[in-house]
Length: 234
Image (cartoon, rainbow, N blue to C red; front, side, top):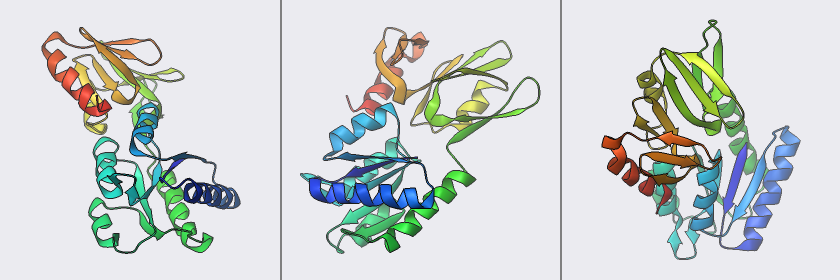
């Protein structure tokens, strides 16, 4: 699992990073924890790959953490949010974005434990994966975070991931219904693209970070450009 700590106070952020790493290790949870001092570097990192959970300070420089949480919710609805604050006064407002928890700074292991335990349970039960049926009748699980784009050729689906391609059966419309619409865009009748891996948009194509291109329908180009700019914050 991937966790992020976002706090403008470097010492407080590092303290929480260490506590998360040590407790996760004791619980047998494999994870990485990254630290960020502000909203911009956090969102830049989330474009490449979303975090399973963000431990977010309620006041980050000139940015109110609750507003930042709303942005995270909009673009990455599956990312869990845990507020970490020096004050109790934001607790009621914080729950408007349905966080996984609200912790006071310098939190002890006893209060962190149920948060990590719940994250582990959620990952095992639901997991951010897409289920598809392969041509031989087997079920395949495709991690959404790894999915670059989906292509349909004839009556077959091809799920192009960061590491390989999985062949499946079904309809592209059915796949679109199973994916978060803010992150995955139906660029063409034959393509769905994962916006987190889009580096640029050209005339009638999305340029991916790995150099591949995904076709954009001519009649969707204007919409596709607006969707990409909104997602990337351009």
